[in-house]
Image (cartoon, rainbow, N blue to C red):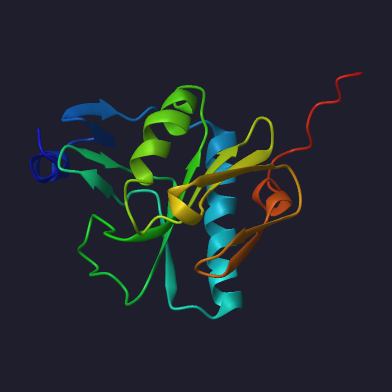
Length: 184
């Protein structure tokens, strides 16, 4: 199936799906921790855009990113810059920042196939993999000469330049209850 065929097919389907190499995959239901971290990340991105005064926009999950003719992913959040997209759009053509929040069923795909796929898009400058269990962010950034630089952060600020955003790592996990005390 091509992405164009998939988008027509998915329009009338219950649930959410992604297309990988022409094959349809159903997306699993979310756990509460995943949903809380996803929402906190979306909110933090929105705040960072407003604070920076940039002509950029955060889109929550539900929007598609076309990687190639037979693959489209639905990230948990993304940022694109420029004029607002059409309100009937289901795809965001030029994301600058893409975010996936890990879940037990997606960890391998997010750190493998999606990492490689998102960086085939020239517009993608940052891919954040947010781990709600370990409370850390794996920040992949497009470097010079085509290199992808990786930083693992459990605190501090994430510099997303371009476009010029700054995110607090602890803010992404603020809605989660404190971690269990291993000594208890």
